[in-house]
Amino acid sequence: MSSSGKRVLITGGTRGIGRAIAQTLSPTHDLLIGGRDDASVKQTCAALRSAEPFVADLADEDATRAAAESVGDLDAVVHSAGVLGHGPVTSLDRADWRHTMELNVVAVADLTRLLLPALRRAHGTVVVINSGAGLTARADTALYAASKFAVRAFADSLREQEREHGVRVTSIYPGRVDTDMQRELIESGGQHYVGSNYIRPESIAAAVRLAVEMSADASVDDLSVRPGPR
Image 1: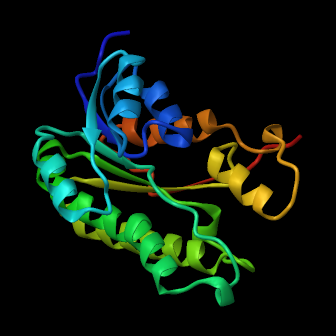
Image 2: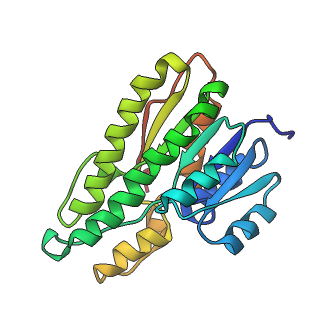
């Protein structure tokens, strides 16, 4: 298939859900692959049909601004980068809260702000990979859930703000997905990890493709992806 000519930036594009999204969109889109490690980003780009590196530590304001200034035209951004942040409230200090909020909320908001002029010109799409934790908070998930509730509010507000500019905003809420982050979470609780028990990253990537490729007369605002029957 030939490229649609549309450019999509995927943060966290070198692993897990982000990499699956890149592989799913690669046949029909021109991609910018986001990540902190230059070698990993270049290796991922080399394996895709049409991809360029977007190397930046999104917790670094100056680095994020410099990377965003080099983007040029853009039709969509998919925010897939993030960190876990897990444990009882009694074990979390201010540094833990700041680190998780910085990457899961502040970086998403700041990068979106920097990219909005290009997205408005393209009547583009912002996709935020949220989590089931952005809908329901459980024991020992206060930090992660708080960050996901916050980025949910950001996306909801942005959606209303950007309607007049023709920019669509989608939040996707995956259930538990077979990723390194999921393995870390399960094994930290002393349980045995079995990847086949969880949603494949490719299934989340299919949901992202739906949002990005939706015709201009419609918008996927919120999409919850839960485990199917076993």
